[in-house]
Amino acid sequence: MGMPAQHTEWTAGMARALPDDGKRYEVLDGKLFVSPAPSFTHQRAVALLYEILAPYARTHGIGETMVSPADIEFSATRLVQPDIFVIPVVPGRPTRAWRDITRLLLAAEVLSPSTARGDRYTKRIVFQDEGVPDYWIVDLDARVFERWRPSDQRPEILGEVLHWQPASATAPLTIDLVRYFADVWR
Image (cartoon, rainbow, N blue to C red; front, side, top):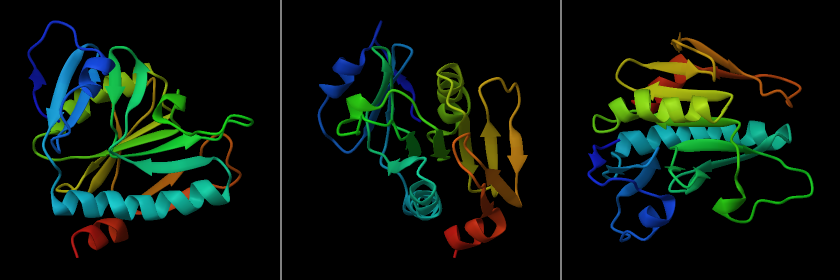
């Protein structure tokens, strides 16, 4: 995540009014963050994680897996674009627009040099404060996932296997992280 742009108080509406220039604009507690386009390896990591999460979420009927760009607006001063996220199924209320999303089951960010500080601190605090049950930080260089939950003071560091079981799922998803990182760096 890039540096916050200088302005007194940004809103989601103000960020949406910015030009479509290939950059990602997010508003975190009233501050505008601007990120450059991600690297090829970053996008491969996102795609591989999507390929793991999407069938699990669909098969177990827990939700829908999506990738950014996306405008997830928690409030007028909190607009996020997680690299990959899972939105829960809400019976009788199909999701048709970004504004329909009011909560997430999972948000994940793949670190980049320009986003690491914001992903680890600013965004993590927002996701924890919003009660997102799982926030994963994917550190490609260290080959680990940092798992954060809403009340955590420190992350769980996972390098071998990650088990994820949302409350509504009947069986856990097991991700072989050694294989995942090998596939990312193939």
